[in-house]
Image (cartoon, rainbow, N blue to C red; front, side):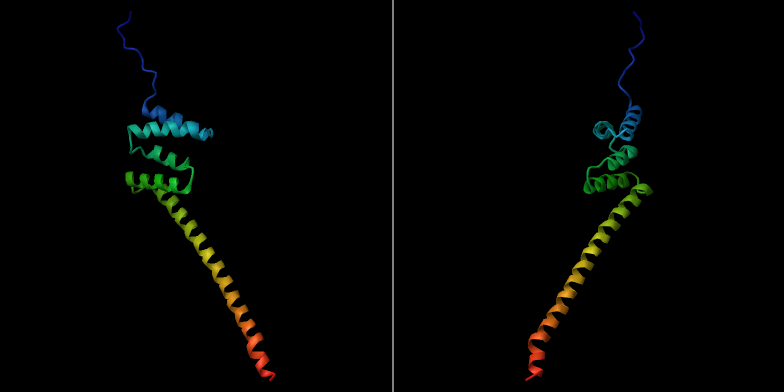
Length: 128
C-alpha cells in the first residue's frame, strides 16, 4: 500500500476547456456545449468559454446573449464587440431593404392610381 494519494482522473477546468475546444473544432457541438456549460457552472466569467458558447449558439438571439456576457466580463473584447456590430449592421441592412421594397411598391401603386384616375375621369371629360 502506498501513502501517495490517488490521482484524480477528472480533468481540471483548463483541461476541460481544451477538450471542449477540440470537440467544437471537430464539429461535436453538443459535446462541446456540455463541457463549456460545465466550465461556466464553475466559473461564470470564463471569457474563452463564453466566446465559444457564442460560436456554438443555435440562433442569432442566443449568440447575441453570449456576446453580451463576454462584454460584461471584458468590455475590451474587440472580437465580441465586432461580432455584435456585424449582427446589428446585418439586422439594420435587412430592415432598410424591407423599407426600400415597401417604398418602391407604394410608389408604383400611387403612380398606377394616378394613371387610372386620369384615364377614367380626366380624359373622358376633355373629349366632351
